[in-house]
Every structure is written in C-alpha cells, then in structure tokens.
Length: 393
Image (cartoon, rainbow, N blue to C red; front, side):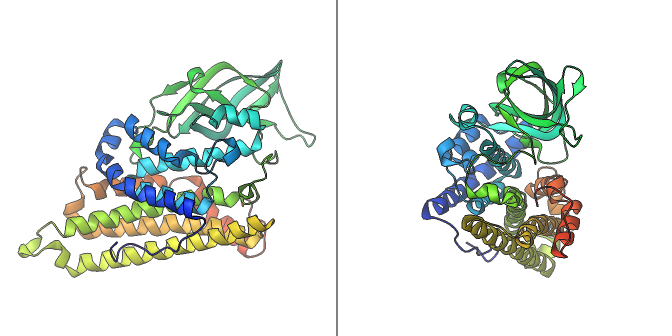
C-alpha cells in the first residue's frame, strides 16, 4: 500500500471482507487485460469465468436464490477493486450484481430459474418493449439499448408496456402498466452497437426479440410491485446504486496508479524525472485526497443506511445522503482523473496510455443518469425536507 491508497475501515463479516481481498488479488491481472478488453470490446471468456467463479457477479443475490448475499458495501468494494484494474470489467461486475436485485421481486422459482445456476443478466430499465397478453404470460417483442455484459449474459431483461390485444393496459388511476420481463439469451438477438468513447469493453449493445413467450410470473413492475424477499437490501433501494460511486473511485485509483508509475519511469524536460516535478507531485496528492475523501463519505453514509435497514426502517435523510455520496464520488473521481491527465501532459495523450483510457472510461461512466445532475437536484430537495422527485430515493 502506498500513500495514494485511501484507508477504508473494514465493514461487515469476515467472509465479505475476504471477497474484497480476493478482488484486490485479481485486479492486477485484470489490469494486464485492459488493452485487449478495449480492443475486443468485450471481456475475455477466461476473465468472465474467473469473475464468475469468485462469486462477484452474484454478490448481491440472496443466498437462498443461489447468491452470496454480501452486504452492499462490500459488494461495492469488490466493484471498486476490479474497476481499479479495468473500468469495463468493473462495470460488468457492477451491472450483473445490480441485476441480481431484481430477483427479490419475483417468485422464488422464477428467480432460481434465472440466477440459480450462475446466470448473468443484462438488460435495460426502459419501457420501450411490447408485451401482449397471451394464455399464461406475454408475447414479447422489442429492441432495447445499453445491455451491459451482453457478450456473456445468459438472460436479458427488457422493460415493456403491457397490451391486451391492441389496447394498452392501464391501472385504476389510468397509468400505463409496464413490466420488466426476463428472456433467455437463446431467444434474443444482440446487435453490435456499442462503439463508444470509453467503457468499450462492456459490450453494452442493443438487444432485441420477436414474439418471445415469457410466463406471467417471470417479471415485475418497476417502482410499483413490492419485494417478495425479506432481505434488508429491499428496504434500502439507494444502496443498489452505490456501485456507480465505487466504480468511479476504482477508476480514479487506477489513474493514480498510472500517474505514479509513469512519473517514476519517465524522464522529462531538462533530464529530470517526471516524479520530481512539483506539478505532478501536487496533482497526485490532490487526486488522492479528493478520491479518498469521496470514498469515505460514500462508504460511511452507505453503512449508516445499511444499519438502519437491518434494524427494520430507513430515514429519508439517510437515503438521500447515500445517493448524494454516490454522485459525489463520481464527480470527485472525474476531477481527479482530469487533473492527473493534464499534469502528465504529453505522457498521457496517446491512445495506448492507460491514463488516456481511464480518462475516456470515467467520462463515459459519468454520463449515467443515476449519478448525474438530476441526482444532485433530488438529493438537495430531500436534504431540505422536500420530496426528491427522482426514483430510488
């Protein structure tokens, strides 16, 4: 450990902490695959197997549904460590773990059929598909974007509007009825659309299906149907999104690693080692302080909410603080990576530079709606005693 590593106190059980340690052990090997991951625009099959065997894809899956039921803080720490090695690999772990949260909203038998044998879900929470009611379920057609992990997913989740024949189904208040429905990978087509600035290895492609049959019980209405599982995570929905903050922290920590490695191996202007330049020294220190502070705020706030959830009830202020901490972690991480990239100047501008890749990755990750400007606005409303007017607060 160097001075650039933030010191995070241990949370949760010894078994959960061992999983974080395992992620720390795997991360250097993940980092060596970064260029291949970016070039091939997907995770290598051997890396997927390693992450799957380690249990990282199923950290947030309840134990009785085939998962590890790791507390959300240590699950986020796993994402951070893998993202420190490679942002795309960390993102795929993050999205697969988040998708495990869907399991608690369906009957146990349906969830086991999806995740019970090591299944990995990719999908989109956007009601743009069409599900027509038929006997026993729905006839589903549609095309959805941003299915992260599409290259290794075994199931796909697509949110649909529900129809009875040609008529849109509505609830008693006249609102459109929707449902997140789960379709085997064998029944979808993945479209090679993910050609982006960063996170190129996440394979966040479009997927589509035509007239796939989905049983009535293999799905749920987002933000409407109550959870069927009693795990504490389902009493603290904001914790499902802290992985976005921990992912950003991991990328920023990786960028600090890159800056230090570059500075200590490169001779700069006037024959002086880059590490001896005050400009770079200051940037490394500021970045480490900024990211470390954001990490502690994220994990301390999240642990406070988790303790409330374990006790049975959560407070609005605590929930809002967690969403704020996740978005703050992203913002601080972007600033840190930008600062390091600028300080290294021409040493970081080549596409082959790991810091160049980390710059592209962190800016791509920051575009996600769940840690963007609207989250800050909603958190501000909640902290001032108003309704946040944004989901999952």
